[in-house]
Amino acid sequence: MLKLAVIGKDVSGSLSPAMHTFLLGKMGAACSYEKVSIPPEKFSSRAEELFSRFDCFNVTIPFKADIMPCLAQICGDAKAFGAVNTVVSRTRAGYNTDGNGFMLMLENAGLEPRGKRVLVLGAGGAGRSCIYKLAERGAQVSVYERSAERLAEVHRELGSFTPLAQVAPEQYDIVLNCTGIGMHDTVGKTPSVRTERGEEPVGEELLSQCGAAVDLIYEPAQSEFLRIAASLGKRTVNGDAMLFYQAYFSDCIYLERTPSAAEAKKFYEQYRGGIQ
Image (cartoon, rainbow, N blue to C red; front, side, top):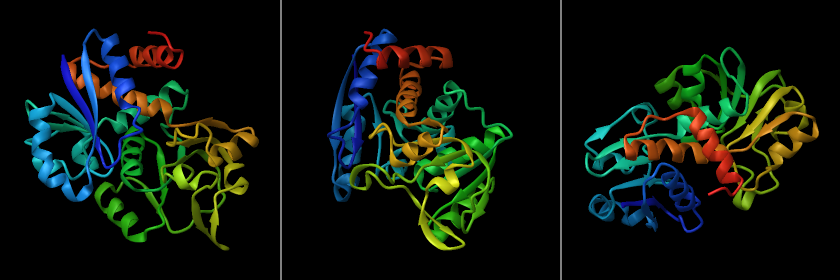
């Protein structure tokens, strides 16, 4: 039986145990899956014990970069993202499955970004992985980030998108919210952007010209950002499938199993339908 866990500042409400237990069961593997919350000031002193306590573990906010100095190998997308969400203790190897989960979410939602104009709001950890994968796929990516310093830093490192100092209501095939605004204590709000009139919340003016609106938020299921887009008749996608698919890719790493988009989609439909 695999001993697994999710590690974060506060993972008390994490959906990871249910998702990974379901997925690994479908793949024929048994597991125990713990939720381990660690205060940020104690992470450096407690990180080493994770490798002996667990066969593998997932890492979430705010430790995706903090775990990296403890690893012997940084693999795949984790190198470009500068963040790890999946760790194999035996080899001390770190991976990042967020980008692959995001792209599979788009694919299975029928959104092909190749050659399309995509506006990304937010260049933090989640935004960075999405920017990288969208540009890799061949999308024309524009990025708005409230912190000019962060935007400049990400642009220096990735250099595969157009940085925006302000957002004009232009036509985009996809507008993607990676800010986290709309969940927790910001429910009912949309991200703010600088316009020629000053700072304003994203609303109908911008979303009326998009083809589809995608929000990485999955709770609530319909953020205010998506509610506005849906009211305008736009296609909307929330981040629920991305969360499931990044878990799927992590479990494939744990089991040294070749991922399959069709299999992942089938498992997601079964999970959402309550099929064991």
